Amino acid sequence: MILSSGKKEAYASLLPWLFTLSFILITFLPRSVDDTMFMDGVTYAAIARNMAEGIGSFWQPFFAHSFWLPYDNGPFFSGHPPLQFGLQAILFRIFGDTPAVENIYNLLILTGYMLLIVKIWQKMLDPASPFQAFGWLPVLCWYTVGIVYYSIPNNFLDSTMGLFCLASCYFQLVYLKEVPVQKHRALWPLLAGICIVLAFLTKGPVGLYPLAFAAIYTVSIPTYGLSKAFPPIVIMLGVIALGIMGILAYGPAREFMATYFNGQVVQALLQKREKAGTGWTAHFTLVSELLRNLLPHLIACTLLYGLSFGFKWRISRDTAISENVLLTALVAASGIVPMLVSIKQYPHYLLPALPFVALLFAFLLVQRIAFIMAHKKQLITIALSVGVVVCWGATFRKLATLPPDVHSDNAKQLRTLVPLASTIGICHDLFQRADIHANFQRYHHLSLSTGIDSLKYVLADSACLSQFDLKHDSIVPLHGGYLLVVQNLDR
Image (cartoon, rainbow, N blue to C red; front, side, top):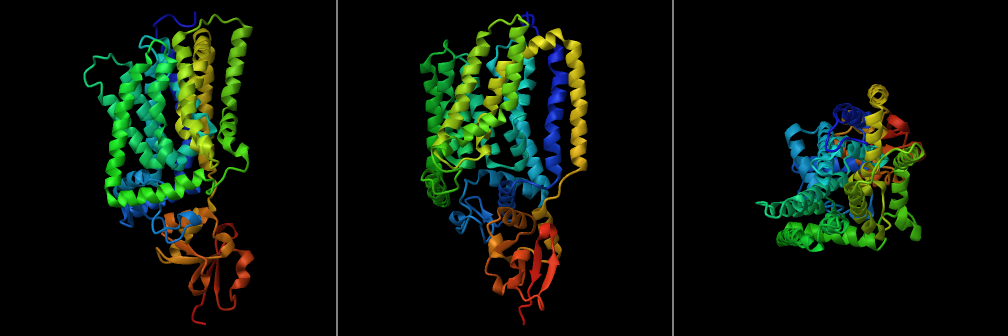
């Protein structure tokens, strides 16, 4: 017997949760205090900050007077729908122009994911299931995916969109699990539909995949008739239709969405935007990235299943576990497979589907982990206690050795050298470096131009110094071998 029927073991909660939270802090805490993010997240924060300061608006987000990608160089930023920018702008209005805004926002996103993953885990199981107490396991499986612990502190749109998608799936699950005569039952698909609209307004059509959840649920649970999926799907489609009509009825919103759709969605499908590669293999970049990131999970499964077979652990088949394995696998696939149509693929595009990948592995592992915890309590207690200490040691070590970020440090140094919100020159070969654009705008409102002849301040490196009159121009060294050339325009 792995656990007595219906009995929830106390050992399966507090210490494992402490270890899980400690493990999360290893990457999340240091990344939240170093003012360093991937350039996408810095760019989105700059747009939100500008929106909070009245520079641009919700339906006309503004990044800078320059942009490194040719297809996003319009009068406003139309690369993505504006919901995350608007949400972060609220925090900027509350806290001011401080990097704490991005960190608070990322913490809220992280917390939201953890709560929803646990709630979905508990909802998928019978209330009397002994595995209810293992809510920490899918959270741990989720955060041990490299894409997750890299992306969550990086302010990606996919994180916010994925949270709305996860909330939609949870609301649908509540509806499907409730007794049909339950009062206000229709509220859940209504909320699910609203979450899909919010996901769409965060990053476009890829946020629509939760529409398939109810149908997948009825396919995965044989006792649940397929016809029962129709009511929630109809309600969600109605909410989405009303949301789209509301958007299209408002002129500025209609203009923005038309520009976004033609410049981002259509161009990506036509393979005219960024590409993961060439040839048919580029369509499967996300699959290879997923497998690479799941190596620890696959190894854990192999070891635990090998031990259980080798030592002949008495683990009986659990029908609910098997059904949930199929359910989570299909839901994860519904979030990944549609994106394979385009060859514009980056690892963080997997974020919305990864909670269900984590739930899948948690269901695969939980019986064997429960068996070990039930029969080796003292060993597990020692192992988890040591793990907590190691996690905190690793966290403090990372906090003590935070690596500098050249571009954010340069942007902050320019605060004492260049007037706020200026347009400065930049050597032609440096213009395509997105980190420079993102950090200079985020930390000093600077725009960049390759038309350097008429600009007093120019960002350069040693390769382009020959373009300047070093007898009359001043050179200020910056971090990472960069230079600020202060031109004497009166010569």
